[in-house]
Image (cartoon, rainbow, N blue to C red; front, side, top):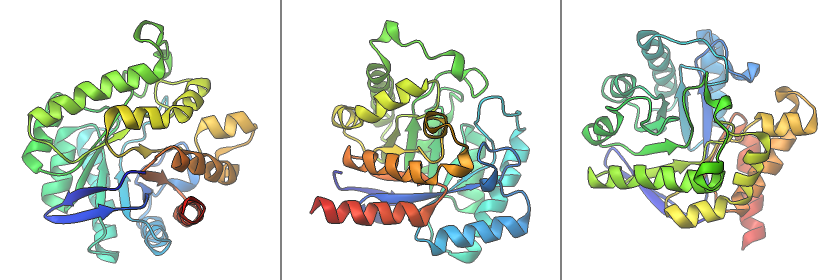
Length: 282
Protein backbone atom coordinates (compact mmCIF):
# COMPACT_ATOMS: atom_id res chain seq x y z
CA UNK A 1 0.00 0.00 0.00
CA UNK A 2 0.98 3.63 -0.44
CA UNK A 3 1.64 5.35 2.92
CA UNK A 4 -0.95 7.98 3.83
CA UNK A 5 -1.94 10.26 6.69
CA UNK A 6 -5.23 11.53 8.08
CA UNK A 7 -5.94 14.42 10.43
CA UNK A 8 -7.73 13.21 13.55
CA UNK A 9 -8.85 16.45 15.24
CA UNK A 10 -5.44 18.05 14.86
CA UNK A 11 -3.50 14.84 15.48
CA UNK A 12 -1.82 13.56 12.32
CA UNK A 13 -2.17 9.79 12.03
CA UNK A 14 0.54 8.61 9.63
CA UNK A 15 -0.03 5.14 8.22
CA UNK A 16 2.90 3.31 6.67
CA UNK A 17 1.30 -0.10 7.09
CA UNK A 18 -2.36 -1.17 6.72
CA UNK A 19 -4.72 -0.33 9.56
CA UNK A 20 -7.30 -2.59 11.16
CA UNK A 21 -10.76 -1.13 11.82
CA UNK A 22 -12.87 -3.05 14.31
CA UNK A 23 -16.64 -3.25 13.82
CA UNK A 24 -18.92 -2.40 16.74
CA UNK A 25 -22.56 -2.89 15.75
CA UNK A 26 -25.03 -1.41 18.23
CA UNK A 27 -27.86 -3.21 16.44
CA UNK A 28 -30.18 -6.17 16.97
CA UNK A 29 -30.16 -7.32 13.34
CA UNK A 30 -26.71 -7.14 11.71
CA UNK A 31 -26.11 -10.03 9.28
CA UNK A 32 -23.43 -11.63 11.47
CA UNK A 33 -25.31 -12.45 14.64
CA UNK A 34 -22.21 -12.61 16.87
CA UNK A 35 -21.47 -8.95 16.10
CA UNK A 36 -24.79 -7.67 17.48
CA UNK A 37 -24.25 -5.67 20.66
CA UNK A 38 -27.70 -4.97 21.94
CA UNK A 39 -27.05 -4.92 25.68
CA UNK A 40 -24.59 -2.69 27.50
CA UNK A 41 -22.73 -5.67 28.97
CA UNK A 42 -22.22 -7.21 25.51
CA UNK A 43 -21.25 -3.84 24.06
CA UNK A 44 -18.55 -3.27 26.66
CA UNK A 45 -17.21 -6.80 26.32
CA UNK A 46 -17.02 -6.54 22.52
CA UNK A 47 -15.42 -3.09 22.56
CA UNK A 48 -12.84 -4.24 25.11
CA UNK A 49 -11.96 -7.25 22.95
CA UNK A 50 -11.58 -5.16 19.77
CA UNK A 51 -9.29 -2.73 21.58
CA UNK A 52 -7.25 -5.43 23.33
CA UNK A 53 -6.81 -7.28 20.03
CA UNK A 54 -5.16 -4.23 18.46
CA UNK A 55 -7.77 -2.23 16.56
CA UNK A 56 -6.44 1.05 15.13
CA UNK A 57 -9.95 2.47 14.68
CA UNK A 58 -13.36 1.41 16.00
CA UNK A 59 -16.28 1.81 13.56
CA UNK A 60 -19.61 2.22 15.32
CA UNK A 61 -22.93 1.71 13.55
CA UNK A 62 -26.51 1.86 14.74
CA UNK A 63 -28.28 1.00 11.47
CA UNK A 64 -27.94 -2.41 9.84
CA UNK A 65 -27.32 -2.09 6.11
CA UNK A 66 -27.92 -5.74 5.29
CA UNK A 67 -30.52 -6.36 2.53
CA UNK A 68 -34.02 -6.39 4.00
CA UNK A 69 -33.03 -4.77 7.30
CA UNK A 70 -35.68 -2.69 9.06
CA UNK A 71 -35.54 1.08 8.89
CA UNK A 72 -34.25 2.80 12.02
CA UNK A 73 -35.47 6.30 12.99
CA UNK A 74 -32.69 8.88 13.13
CA UNK A 75 -33.17 9.54 16.85
CA UNK A 76 -32.81 5.84 17.64
CA UNK A 77 -29.71 5.60 15.45
CA UNK A 78 -28.23 8.57 17.33
CA UNK A 79 -28.97 6.92 20.67
CA UNK A 80 -27.33 3.65 19.66
CA UNK A 81 -24.22 5.33 18.28
CA UNK A 82 -23.87 7.58 21.31
CA UNK A 83 -23.94 4.51 23.55
CA UNK A 84 -21.23 2.86 21.46
CA UNK A 85 -18.96 5.91 21.40
CA UNK A 86 -19.29 6.49 25.14
CA UNK A 87 -18.38 2.85 25.78
CA UNK A 88 -15.26 2.97 23.59
CA UNK A 89 -14.09 6.33 24.93
CA UNK A 90 -14.53 5.15 28.50
CA UNK A 91 -12.27 2.15 27.84
CA UNK A 92 -9.76 3.85 25.52
CA UNK A 93 -10.11 7.67 25.41
CA UNK A 94 -7.58 8.11 22.59
CA UNK A 95 -9.01 5.40 20.31
CA UNK A 96 -10.11 6.96 16.98
CA UNK A 97 -13.80 6.31 16.39
CA UNK A 98 -15.62 6.39 13.08
CA UNK A 99 -19.38 6.71 12.83
CA UNK A 100 -21.02 4.41 10.29
CA UNK A 101 -24.00 6.40 9.00
CA UNK A 102 -25.45 7.87 5.81
CA UNK A 103 -27.34 10.61 7.71
CA UNK A 104 -25.66 13.96 8.12
CA UNK A 105 -27.51 14.85 11.33
CA UNK A 106 -26.49 11.56 12.92
CA UNK A 107 -22.88 12.17 11.87
CA UNK A 108 -22.96 15.71 13.25
CA UNK A 109 -24.27 14.56 16.63
CA UNK A 110 -21.72 11.75 16.82
CA UNK A 111 -18.82 14.12 16.16
CA UNK A 112 -19.91 17.26 18.05
CA UNK A 113 -21.71 15.70 21.01
CA UNK A 114 -19.88 12.43 21.55
CA UNK A 115 -16.37 12.73 20.10
CA UNK A 116 -16.35 10.62 16.93
CA UNK A 117 -13.47 11.56 14.63
CA UNK A 118 -14.30 9.99 11.23
CA UNK A 119 -17.46 9.68 9.12
CA UNK A 120 -17.97 6.36 7.31
CA UNK A 121 -20.79 6.83 4.79
CA UNK A 122 -21.99 3.71 2.95
CA UNK A 123 -23.90 5.89 0.48
CA UNK A 124 -21.04 8.25 -0.36
CA UNK A 125 -23.41 11.21 0.03
CA UNK A 126 -26.13 9.83 -2.24
CA UNK A 127 -28.75 9.37 0.49
CA UNK A 128 -28.29 12.76 2.17
CA UNK A 129 -27.52 15.84 0.11
CA UNK A 130 -26.25 17.64 3.22
CA UNK A 131 -23.55 15.10 3.97
CA UNK A 132 -20.68 16.69 2.04
CA UNK A 133 -21.32 20.13 3.58
CA UNK A 134 -21.47 18.47 6.98
CA UNK A 135 -18.05 16.90 6.39
CA UNK A 136 -16.71 20.35 5.53
CA UNK A 137 -18.29 21.84 8.65
CA UNK A 138 -16.94 19.14 10.96
CA UNK A 139 -13.50 18.97 9.30
CA UNK A 140 -13.10 15.22 9.80
CA UNK A 141 -11.84 12.43 7.53
CA UNK A 142 -14.55 10.99 5.29
CA UNK A 143 -14.94 7.44 3.98
CA UNK A 144 -16.97 7.36 0.76
CA UNK A 145 -18.34 3.98 -0.27
CA UNK A 146 -19.69 2.87 -3.63
CA UNK A 147 -23.23 1.55 -3.71
CA UNK A 148 -26.50 2.06 -5.56
CA UNK A 149 -29.90 2.82 -4.09
CA UNK A 150 -30.79 2.01 -0.51
CA UNK A 151 -30.00 -1.10 1.51
CA UNK A 152 -33.46 -2.42 0.64
CA UNK A 153 -33.03 -1.82 -3.12
CA UNK A 154 -29.37 -2.39 -3.80
CA UNK A 155 -29.36 -6.05 -4.78
CA UNK A 156 -31.76 -5.27 -7.64
CA UNK A 157 -29.31 -2.67 -8.99
CA UNK A 158 -26.41 -4.85 -10.12
CA UNK A 159 -26.53 -4.24 -13.89
CA UNK A 160 -23.42 -2.27 -14.83
CA UNK A 161 -23.46 -2.91 -18.58
CA UNK A 162 -24.33 0.69 -19.45
CA UNK A 163 -21.45 2.06 -17.36
CA UNK A 164 -18.73 -0.22 -18.69
CA UNK A 165 -18.73 -2.76 -15.87
CA UNK A 166 -18.62 -2.66 -12.11
CA UNK A 167 -15.00 -1.52 -11.81
CA UNK A 168 -15.51 1.31 -14.27
CA UNK A 169 -18.64 2.37 -12.41
CA UNK A 170 -16.80 2.44 -9.06
CA UNK A 171 -14.01 4.57 -10.51
CA UNK A 172 -16.36 6.96 -12.30
CA UNK A 173 -18.74 7.36 -9.35
CA UNK A 174 -16.12 7.81 -6.65
CA UNK A 175 -13.98 10.06 -8.87
CA UNK A 176 -16.88 12.52 -9.18
CA UNK A 177 -17.41 12.48 -5.43
CA UNK A 178 -13.72 13.01 -4.69
CA UNK A 179 -13.75 15.98 -7.07
CA UNK A 180 -16.81 17.51 -5.38
CA UNK A 181 -15.29 17.03 -1.93
CA UNK A 182 -11.95 18.50 -2.99
CA UNK A 183 -13.70 21.54 -4.45
CA UNK A 184 -15.25 22.06 -1.01
CA UNK A 185 -11.81 21.83 0.62
CA UNK A 186 -11.97 18.26 1.95
CA UNK A 187 -8.59 16.54 1.76
CA UNK A 188 -8.84 13.51 4.07
CA UNK A 189 -10.81 11.14 1.83
CA UNK A 190 -10.78 7.35 2.02
CA UNK A 191 -12.56 5.20 -0.54
CA UNK A 192 -14.46 1.95 -0.12
CA UNK A 193 -15.44 -0.05 -3.24
CA UNK A 194 -18.48 -1.42 -1.40
CA UNK A 195 -18.14 -5.19 -1.37
CA UNK A 196 -21.61 -6.70 -1.11
CA UNK A 197 -23.45 -3.46 -1.87
CA UNK A 198 -25.32 -3.54 -5.21
CA UNK A 199 -22.95 -6.25 -6.44
CA UNK A 200 -23.32 -9.92 -7.24
CA UNK A 201 -20.86 -12.44 -5.84
CA UNK A 202 -19.10 -12.60 -9.21
CA UNK A 203 -18.88 -8.80 -9.28
CA UNK A 204 -17.41 -8.76 -5.76
CA UNK A 205 -14.59 -11.03 -6.92
CA UNK A 206 -14.11 -8.85 -10.00
CA UNK A 207 -13.71 -5.81 -7.75
CA UNK A 208 -11.22 -7.72 -5.59
CA UNK A 209 -9.17 -8.61 -8.67
CA UNK A 210 -9.27 -4.96 -9.80
CA UNK A 211 -8.56 -3.39 -6.41
CA UNK A 212 -5.15 -2.07 -7.45
CA UNK A 213 -6.65 -0.63 -10.63
CA UNK A 214 -9.21 1.23 -8.52
CA UNK A 215 -6.54 2.50 -6.14
CA UNK A 216 -4.28 3.68 -8.95
CA UNK A 217 -7.16 5.48 -10.65
CA UNK A 218 -8.48 7.26 -7.56
CA UNK A 219 -5.20 7.77 -5.66
CA UNK A 220 -6.82 7.54 -2.26
CA UNK A 221 -6.41 5.00 0.58
CA UNK A 222 -8.73 2.03 0.09
CA UNK A 223 -10.81 0.57 2.90
CA UNK A 224 -12.16 -2.92 2.31
CA UNK A 225 -15.08 -4.39 4.23
CA UNK A 226 -15.01 -8.10 3.41
CA UNK A 227 -15.44 -9.59 6.86
CA UNK A 228 -17.65 -12.72 6.86
CA UNK A 229 -19.64 -11.47 3.84
CA UNK A 230 -21.75 -13.50 1.45
CA UNK A 231 -19.06 -13.63 -1.26
CA UNK A 232 -17.17 -15.80 1.24
CA UNK A 233 -19.82 -17.94 2.89
CA UNK A 234 -22.00 -18.51 -0.17
CA UNK A 235 -19.01 -19.41 -2.31
CA UNK A 236 -17.89 -21.92 0.32
CA UNK A 237 -21.44 -23.05 1.18
CA UNK A 238 -21.00 -22.27 4.86
CA UNK A 239 -22.42 -19.72 7.32
CA UNK A 240 -21.13 -16.29 8.39
CA UNK A 241 -20.19 -17.90 11.71
CA UNK A 242 -17.92 -20.35 9.85
CA UNK A 243 -16.30 -17.68 7.63
CA UNK A 244 -13.33 -16.47 9.65
CA UNK A 245 -10.75 -18.50 7.71
CA UNK A 246 -12.21 -17.37 4.40
CA UNK A 247 -12.20 -13.78 5.61
CA UNK A 248 -8.50 -13.99 6.44
CA UNK A 249 -7.72 -15.40 2.99
CA UNK A 250 -9.72 -12.68 1.21
CA UNK A 251 -8.25 -9.93 3.41
CA UNK A 252 -4.75 -11.13 2.55
CA UNK A 253 -5.57 -10.95 -1.16
CA UNK A 254 -6.86 -7.41 -0.59
CA UNK A 255 -3.61 -6.46 1.14
CA UNK A 256 -1.68 -7.81 -1.85
CA UNK A 257 -3.74 -5.50 -4.06
CA UNK A 258 -3.13 -2.36 -2.04
CA UNK A 259 -5.80 -2.23 0.69
CA UNK A 260 -4.92 0.35 3.34
CA UNK A 261 -7.61 -0.42 5.92
CA UNK A 262 -9.25 -3.75 6.77
CA UNK A 263 -12.72 -3.33 8.33
CA UNK A 264 -13.34 -6.51 10.32
CA UNK A 265 -15.27 -8.25 13.07
CA UNK A 266 -12.18 -10.21 14.13
CA UNK A 267 -9.34 -7.81 14.87
CA UNK A 268 -6.73 -10.26 16.19
CA UNK A 269 -6.85 -12.40 13.04
CA UNK A 270 -6.73 -9.35 10.77
CA UNK A 271 -3.76 -8.00 12.70
CA UNK A 272 -1.99 -11.34 12.21
CA UNK A 273 -2.71 -11.21 8.47
CA UNK A 274 -1.21 -7.70 8.26
CA UNK A 275 1.90 -8.76 10.22
CA UNK A 276 2.53 -11.83 8.05
CA UNK A 277 1.86 -9.91 4.85
CA UNK A 278 4.37 -7.24 5.89
CA UNK A 279 7.04 -9.84 6.56
CA UNK A 280 6.43 -11.50 3.20
CA UNK A 281 6.46 -8.15 1.40
CA UNK A 282 9.83 -6.96 2.75
